[in-house]
Image (cartoon, rainbow, N blue to C red; front, side, top):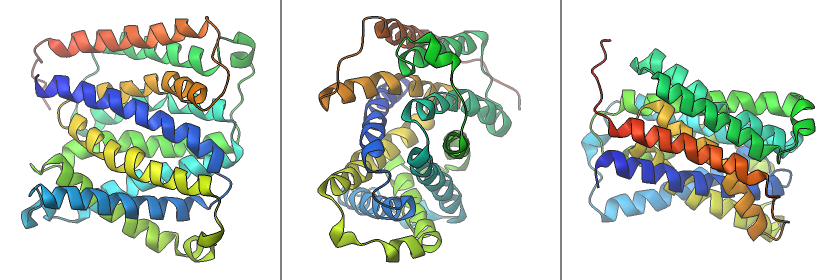
Length: 301
């Protein structure tokens, strides 16, 4: 299996794990301050990734040259997670998910601005089909719900977070100097934890940690280990082998996986019409995979 194929597989798993953070995040968003939650999340994820990287012998002093790079990446990703939870405090989850589907298009724009990555007509078609399918899934095949969509304060907050996420993807490729994905991830997590420790110290001190419901702790450990440590490695690896727009195209699968998570948590299964949207996201990914299989043409900077 080629590195490009492994990168696509990594992003498929990424979409599944991210979907779980949406399902659990909605349940705990109002039970703990977003700054405090994400500071602990980054801290736990740093310990997990640091231990794995250390035991595998993939941490070297030269991997942490120019530490400002990690501060930039850590601040961007920490901003996304914090703003996501701030947005979910007031935004309707369906509306927030709709905002999330804008990330691949934004990532394509920043991929061009930072790396001069060109979105081909075929890729643009795939992104459009994926967006249509994701919206169909998000609004549960209800055109009236789609027409009534309104951007509120929470959605706008989350949109800023999605912009940070979209910038982060091409930034990983631009700032990497040959470091392995796990070492690069560890540096990003440490930097993100430090940023949140400084910026969110007030919320961290004010949180009554011993009084938090068990569900909050379950959510914290899930987002720390699976939706942070694991997805960070997956995203870092994929970003080194795929254009930014293709990496973030897997975002379109997240609403479909959210439905799977919701059913697993005891919610009703979606209607048959929802499968139309899921089919469209699969078509989009097939187009992207076929596009990726073609030899890349050099692009002049």
